[in-house]
Picture 1 (spheres, helix red, strand yellow):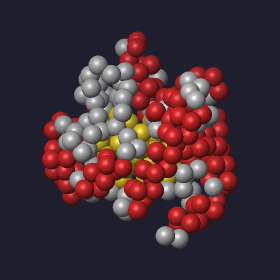
Picture 2 (tube, rainbow, N blue to C red):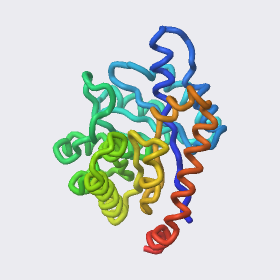
Picture 3 (cartoon, rainbow, N blue to C red):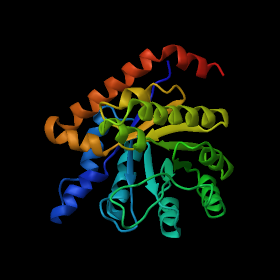
Length: 262
């Protein structure tokens, strides 16, 4: 059975810190705790407006993850500034995401189809530097194909629409269709030779249907885990998420075996 990796996004530890302009809580300490609790890697998004994670955080996280032998997934916009920071730190992975100043959080995937000519050379330079590049895209077959064409090695599927529909108790036909979109996009990405990740909006209720998608190799989860940590602690929150992921993978055993045999 393929083990599904869990990347923990610690951005919103920095959000709480920045609300008071203090030095705590420390995102690096959260990263250490997450890794100790069973996270396979750490994700951090350095936004252009620095609303949560700071440059100093990325400096410290790069050192911490390297020392622990765990991957740092550096989420960033496709800009010269962020490309330069990625090339300076050379994290294990860089996930290219859309970014608009007015949004609260990332609202939808990167439009790789429309931005192909601008994205492709950035991907090439990052890959040449030994960085594993991912494109964060909506579960749309055209976007998956475009991610392959720009040279990305990984595609991360935006699970937000499905997770929101579940939380808002939308009609079952809609949630089923949104989950099916994720399944089809994952299958196509795998067929194209891309490693498949997923993330955004995943919680305890939605993780199992997503985790059961056999082509998925990694989930990246942040906001929910940081929120749940307020009530039960970061370690227990991560451990429960891991248990749900593993239960989903166990139940999806036959489908996983079929994917692995391709």
